[in-house]
Image (cartoon, rainbow, N blue to C red; front, side, top):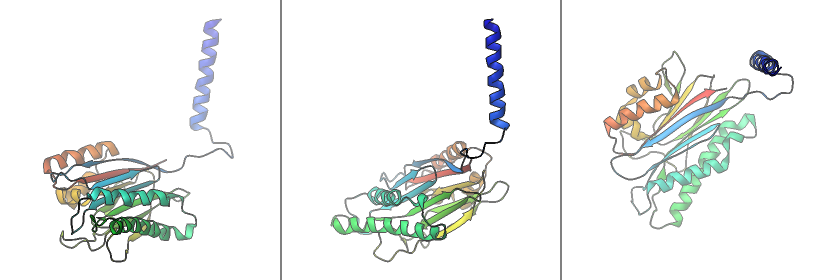
Length: 260
């Protein structure tokens, strides 16, 4: 009798498992929405000064690379990066209201980060030159998922579609590795680079700070981004090569795959 009951229950579980995997969802049931499966890390540079910070959430990734500015100061660049990211998280760009103003929402998010860092520099006479870069991506779920991005500074955002060459979505706001021509917290008005790109499950987006760019170069980064591997394996390989290159500045990498 006991054996019969156990066999019956196993049979029921098997039927439920098959139906759950292959059957259609009843009307009104929740459906899986696209999300970012992301991993990241900061390889500490040989200068010994913390500068990079990042935030990873379900549909938003933001990276900031801070500097003390031309006038130096006792506050580390990490302070500027943290202030910029705090403003981004508070703005909640992944919950934008109007579908027709999504890029404007991301522009305003960058402006909020700019105001936060600028206000801190003005308040603290010891750190008048706090400056940070900012790169962020926001995944908008829906029938046709798309990725919004905003860029300020000398980092980079790459879009990788399987079977095709990676495409940089942004351009550097610097000249020949010189000072930033645009940065979060600079006295000049901020003009962030914003845009939108369609994405599909399996697409990969990579964000890097200038420490990675200087250490590996664009060509080698593109080769590593397109490797047929998981985000974790891709990050591990990048870390191996960063260890060999020993970058002077902090080098931050975020690898995010679009998944459902």
